[in-house]
Image (cartoon, rainbow, N blue to C red):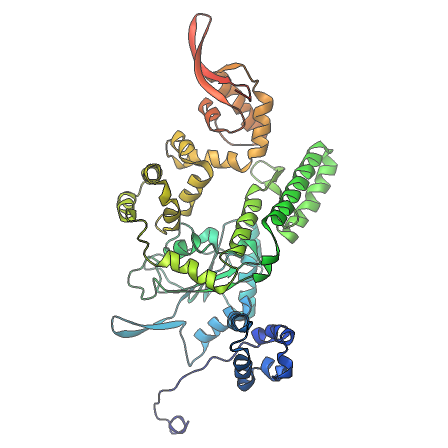
Length: 497
């Protein structure tokens, strides 16, 4: 202080102030463990450093010590973002993170915030007074996101490429992150909230993908990131059977609602769809899995069972009871994807073949062929950031046979993905349209399939070979003689055949 008052240069350490919101949230937990008899919790909540240290001292060696420290360290999502942005704006800092790189101190003055929730991003914009001049928001391109961002004066942005101007703050959602290359000097912050299904980061799959998006080799922070997460040890009281029973109940309710909708008069359908859309926006598929979809191009509305929402919930539960049960589990998962794994020695050979071409079809073929020979490598390949998430999803959902049937062509693969997402409706239509024990020529099968696609609203051109890639009808590719001519087609087998 004496040197500063004299106007002389001096080295001094800057301490970040404790986050009042995080401290206030911790008070009920401390009261539950009886800390109010040993610590002035009002002083603690006000940020008094002696009271904070007293809490840490009292907790040391006690069973709740890790829980107290974890809650104190993590705090709230909004408060954490505010602290990071405040650090950059503080004249005593002016950067996000620093390190020694090539023997010299370097500072990160750009940040990528991976936050898979547009609503939370908007809250951060409002809370921190962010503007399009200093902030880029990259998310899925749709009308809802456009409308949400417009309310705070933003448009959906894009990842800056080499030579393009950059902003210090960039917020990115999962949909936008996949397949996007960032040519920045940014440090990466990842936020995962186990209590919000859409915000759960699968460390095994998502974290390598996120880190792999930083493409600039001159960025000192290319391989650095901080992950902020919430664990949920309270879930230990729930069993798999209880969770699956609840999901099954909502699946049954959803399908019953859709059946009632399809049987209703047009004016009743209008009211049902309006109410369901409001519920969908308010509860985001936590009450049921009914999706109301307005197709602006065709001027039609349809309702459908959102199988992806149900699968996401099941996946979130699996992560909640394993990876995010406690901090040790999170660290173990991070270690598994960041430390070289000697169990997969052929990974470099795969990557050499995969990266040798930029063609989607050729890469998809390399992926399928390699897993044919090394199926045990699937977990490793799914963790590699060099492989687009879309390819991993295609393989996981469809399998290699359907992908090969599509000729490894992405447009053809997407055809099958579209059908998979509405599998229940497609299965019912196939059962109703094809008769067991009957032979269908290729042209006849194609015509029937085309009729099914048209009724379901699939913008697809049918192929008879697609009968081989559905799971509800047992079929056999064969030939028969009709009017003295050999005709190729499919025999629909009996269910017990």
